[in-house]
Image (cartoon, rainbow, N blue to C red; front, side, top):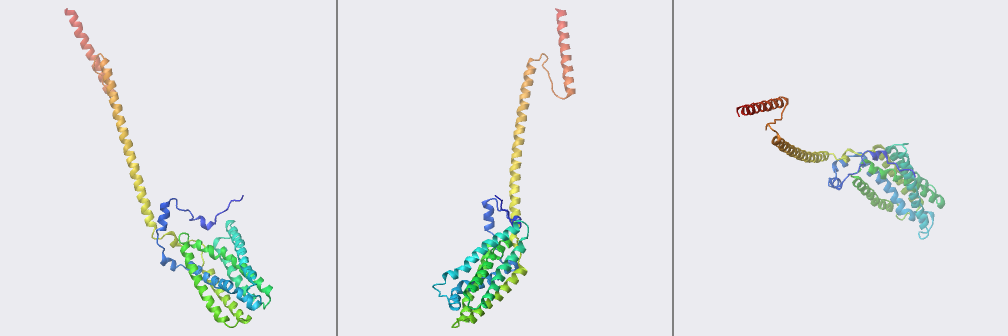
Length: 333
């Protein structure tokens, strides 16, 4: 089996914390809201979410109504037709995500170009598909095919906008995703109001053409902002600015503790070495005393070479004196 390769952008800082304490330190950090609010890549994500959600809400909420009132298929019978675009979107999401990650893993394209290309496909594809639907008349087959094509292309959002949230921030990806989803939901609130105002008592092809045309500038303008300000790298505020000093202090404290422990161990080793040296010295003295007990002269000195020679001469002299006295004693007797 072929091993899965990691995105080069993720290899830089995906080293996960090695202990639960490091995880808890990350989770205890507060979100740098001011830095996030000034980050253009985050704004690019939020604005792109608005455009994508606006068009998606039109598809999701009003597709059965369009099929019934314009194409002429009753809403009780158009369940399968209404679900086909969403099935196409699922298939497109799987295929585009696989292809996009393959491009990154093989080094064919870097992260940012992949995000831009597939985001453009996901946003501009449905826009042009809606334009085609608006001018397709009442042909049901052509209209459903174009809607499925537009939603199939929108599946590329999986490797474009959605993945970009983890590109700009690893530790605050949930926060960035929450901000984007908030903007998307705001757009979803607005869509029913706008569509209802346009199609109220006017369930005609011309009214729905206005609805579809309204989605086009939302898709295009929001995608243009994303293409200009999107980023494929982690932002400086995601690296814990203002927290690095705390980590350094913790590391220094840990190093100091380790140094203290090493010092204690060295002192203990030195103490043990001194005790052993004293024991060896006492043993040598006991051995020396034993030798002195067996010596005839009674003096044996240890030291450097001069002391050893002096000790030998003194022993010889003492032996000579004793021998002389003994000889005199014999002669007197």
